[in-house]
Length: 492
Image (cartoon, rainbow, N blue to C red; front, side, top):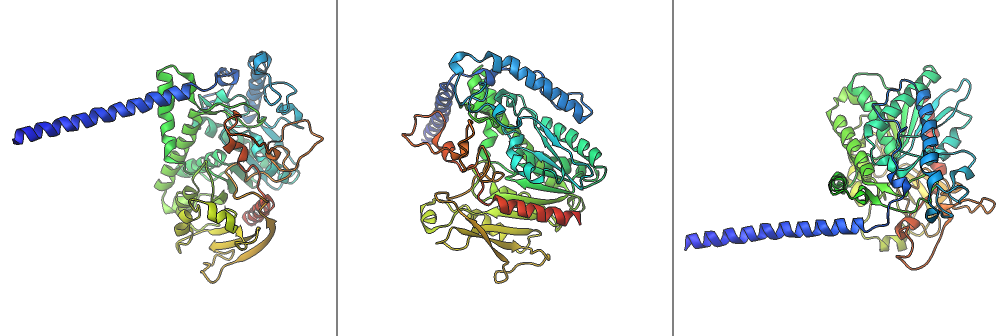
């Protein structure tokens, strides 16, 4: 009887194992089928560019990087722009000359690196954009500093050209380019303060630059670091990216190299997103977290002061990771964190399924904070006006208790119909010519932020979720105000 029971149990166990394997294989085959059933790849998904910079490219000066960049854009012109088939012509295709999305409609091609030197500038600013972006991502910040500082907007490798540039990218490529740009700025400024402004992945690369230096007992390059929606941590699903890419290469299914395939209607940002790009950000975040965890208390004191702006609602990076994996590990050295809450009108609060601030409350209410914190929030549940409420340390380095909050009412309001910010909205003001909400009828070019298309779902190739995503920051003036306040404090 015992032998029969053992035998039966063994058969049941094996049956369960085989059934599980069958289910996994079925799901895998189904997933591969649907991914491969997407639209055909275009030239900008398949062309390989030979003049892109990589970490093993033998360059010693930033001027050589710019020269290589010139060759790169000439290559894009030859291999893509001049060879687009008529079937791909569209009034909103960035690679079609004279289309509404042609970058040539702008006063300068923001896909390229740019430098605005100022004679005897008191400080310099290095701007680092995010993954799939271009230097345009920080153009509003650049305009704020134009004429006041020596400004350099770096085009990171793989960006500003065609989406296929992200399929063979490594985070080390980004880091090597930042090393060149930083050395150039340090030499040009001759010892004067250098600030870095990093958006999303750009912030992660800037942090990596300084963590690597601290780890090697080298002096910091930056006087201060300003992060906007920094990629400190990603959702765990990002770890799957490498496997999807591997399966695609194994089965020779090129479409599996892409998370999304869309019309390239944005002149300064890729709409198609390569699987490898997500893995690059994930690996970079892991590298930074590992180094930060290994640093001694004395080494952490060598990290330059950081000012971060982060929306509590962010579908791209983890807001909680910004707090727990970065700020909770930083010593008392003038670090600052500004959180933008959601629009807490009663109607909005009643509609949300998970309050994004709930996950952050425990961390930001801890009395072990060593940084100055601010939450930009509604003054009340029946008002769209916002206030800046302090938490953690105040400007004098004193702990703010529950009854001793610093509150500044701002002359800023949530726009009608906007319930939160987004990952991509923070670095742009309402007047931005591409992502802002002010319609400029005299410009014959695309204005993504002002678009408000309505219709049935499933018709457009552009997902409705992307069209509805908030593209500009109604509190951008406050962001710039805090940046100036921070910069002046670091230069004293």
